[in-house]
Each structure stands twice: as C-alpha cells, then as structure tokens.
Length: 293
Image (cartoon, rainbow, N blue to C red; front, side, top):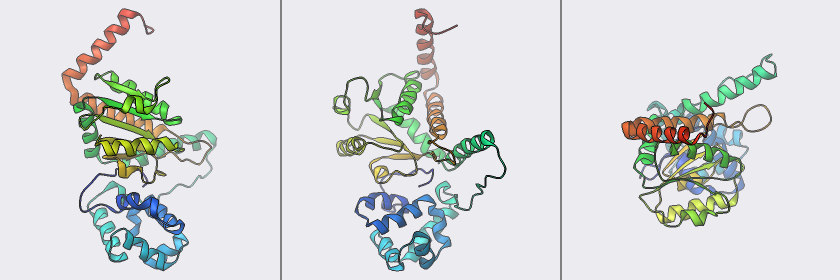
C-alpha cells in the first residue's frame, strides 16, 4: 500500500489489512483489483464501481464480489470507510495517484536526484509518527531483538542491527554466517522482537519464517516495499518504503531513512542508559584502535 503503516488486529480492520489477509485466496482478476486499491486506498472514495472496474480491467461484478469478500456488504460501504480514513487524516489515505511525477527536461543526475528525494518524501510523508514510537518502544522493551533479511534486504538488516547494537545489548542479525533462521529464532517468545526487512525480490523462506514467528506469538515489525502481499498480516507493525523510480534498479534511500528514523527514536527513548551504552562502545573502539582517528 504505497508507504503506509499496517496495524495488527482489531474488529474494524482497515481496507488494506483486509486485502493482505485474503490476498492468497484471490483470483487473478481480484489480485489486479487488490493491487490497484493498495497503491492508493485514499482514491477509492473518488470512484464508482464502474470506474474502478475500468481502471483495473475487470468486470463490475468482480468489484462487487471483491469487496464482499473483504467483509463489506456493498462497495459504497468500502468507499465510506476510505472517505472516513481520509477525513481523519490517515497518511495512507491522504496520498493520491494524482501526484505530479513529470520528468520535464531534467538531465540524468537531476532526474536521479529528484527520484531519490521523491521516494524519501513519499515514504516519510505517509508514516504515522505514533507507529514509529510504538516500534521504538518495542525495541527498547524487548528481551532480544533479531533483525532478519535476505538478499538485498540483508544489507539493510545489517545496517539496522549495527545501529541498534550501539544502544542496547542482545541484537542479532539473521541469517549470519552459516546459520539458518531456525538456529537463531528457536526459543524466541512474546518477550522478544523480530524486525524483518523484506524488500522485493523476496525469497520463499521469508514468508515461512514470518508464519512460524506468528504462530509462536513473537512480535514482528516488517519493513518492506509496496509490492508486499500477505506478509503485513503476519506483522504487528508494517512500514512500507518506496523503492521504485524511473531509472534502473530499486532505490533503498527511503528504507535507509526509515531505519535511521527508528534508531534515532530508540536513542531518545533510551535516554541516559542508551547514551552510556553508546559511550562504552566508543571507548572500546578507541582502546582497541579499531577506527581511524
């Protein structure tokens, strides 16, 4: 869903969470419709069922069936929920597909700069500050923190683990060396926290690991991109980062910014305890001569 935060639980689940919970059971046409709605859920209130069907390239009957499967008696009820969320100021629903992304006469570097800054702005502009606060609090309170990531996401996970390890103990990176996730995730429970970094293209073991953690009652925070489907339903909190630009290769600038934002929030929560831990790390660096002066 764009760059949004997807919350867990509750009787009045938002549209995007209902979609993620049911995504694996959708027909191909329903998935096309789901992808359209997830990109800009705030635009839903602006369209009739006929217009939405045309945009998604599906029938009007598919639209009606899709929203009934999500638990809405009618399409109008889904539009009302979208409109109410937009009026309440939800950053997920305030974002619109009408944003200006024209290229103009920019040269390659100017285009690259605009794409990178635009991805960061769209990501941070749609994040709920209260959710970042909850994530930071969970990191501070957890007995153990495990940061999990595969492929390109592993580098982002390592960056996050490095930041968090400077301000608290018991922070692990998974997978690490010759370990498998099972080696490190065994024994975790509701007192721990797993932060999953899952950018496209994700590997199959990621969903399996998240499913296992969900079954064990281990809290999970998911940092991902707009293409994630189903995974947010397995997480307590989800932060979605924009990665797609108009040039080759995904951009991880917004993901790095989000990780740093979370780390800064943790430092503020830890207060003096966090600063003392950071100082002890720096003293060891100096004593061991590990870093350039």
